[in-house]
Length: 380
Ligand code: UD1
Ligand code: UDP
Image (cartoon, rainbow, N blue to C red; front, side, top):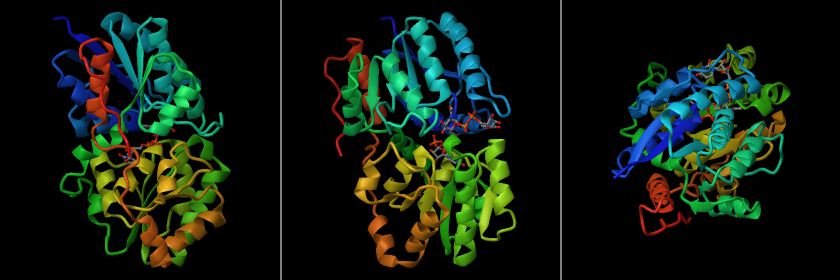
């Protein structure tokens, strides 16, 4: 029997973390030939994830440049993928989420008339500039794809309201599957984490988004400095994204503050373990908003909006925004009011149950006529 050739394309750290367990699942299916193409929109941060999950790319476009623009990434990925698809001739291309790699891969596959499956489909803020450019990327990918793997029922409703072409499956988010690999025994690889005093109120933080560049990011870092100065019992651990814009902003405001540890990006295992041992999380990342609630850690989101309202509604995530005073107020409440903290520190899993990859692989086979039954749906 000829195998179904499924090529997963990804390029950045979060795509890799969320596609890794799926690539492993696809590789375990006898009906599927699983291929990986990385654009390497991120180089070091991508390689770290590949190492963590023991994955090797079949094709590596190696496109990253320092301070790359959105156009740089899109053009390089589009051209590289045209050639890659011509050589590999996949039956189906899988993309993830909403990055420039995601959009370019979907467009390149469409140009080559190869069907596209979109993993983590249907997240929306309905604000085309926030997150920027991700909201537009995922809307465009929604038009290009014909298989849509929506993490939640709400994401699926969004897609149906847009009358997307093809099939929508509710699968849960593969990030919850990824955590089955990463949490392990909780021990750290990074020496910097081995020195953290976890008897303090450790705040795991990240901040990198383009729409926060400039004033919002300065507000966020000033708030962190303020909180750190007022609360010596707290300790921030902030693995800084490799973007030079983010690094300069963070070091400029936070260098010299004793209880703010600015460290190198962590591998996925260490990051998940850091969160699981922290008091709370402050972030503008999408992935952390999904991971921390499953660990029972309160999350303050350093953005004006979120495409992930499920955990806000469950009460474990609060949208703090990008105004300094608002961030300081929300963080101080969690640091000083035990009842407020306890109300947020409960484990909820609105984003998945650890079976998303199994459902996606089954849906692919069902869609190809290689499996009779439609997969079950993820329900909260
Ligand atoms: C990208 C995604 C964003 C995602 C984020 C995850 C787009 C438009 N944005 O944004 O959706 O949330 O990744 O982190 O696709 N760099 C390195 N080494 C690395 C990674 C990055 O040096 O391993 C530096 C490079 O100088 C690069 C810069 O970071 O030019 C920015 O990377 P880029 O992928 O363009 O943007 P992100 O902000 O990472
Ligand atoms: N992450 C990591 N090391 C770090 C910071 C984050 O492994 O130093 C993980 C994090 O746990 C999550 C993913 O990277 O799984 C989120 O990626 P990122 O914040 O780069 O992008 P976003 O989620 O905002 O798209």
